Length: 99
Image 1 (tube, rainbow, N blue to C red):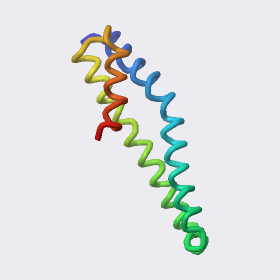
Image 2 (image 1 turned 90 degrees about the horizontal axis):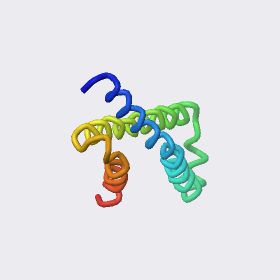
Image 3 (image 1 turned 135 degrees about the horizontal axis):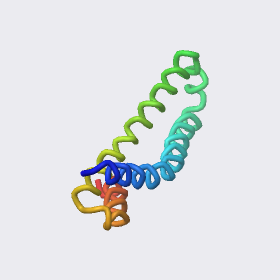
């Protein structure tokens, strides 16, 4: 694999997954807000600077885990060929829904 192929694979992976990061973060935010509202009285008692910091750390870790999709995408593109890029992304995006 030459440097141009590597750049192409990385660019394809980033352009596909970064757009979906907004949706990913919106879903995570909706889940957190939903739990907060569902347990409103208890949630109000648990709001502390430490809890907010822990929530921030968890959000950062969730986004780092999201980046693992890049590595899987790059490997899949390399194995299946860059000409099947759309097919690779569709397959990878559908995996979580099938678990």
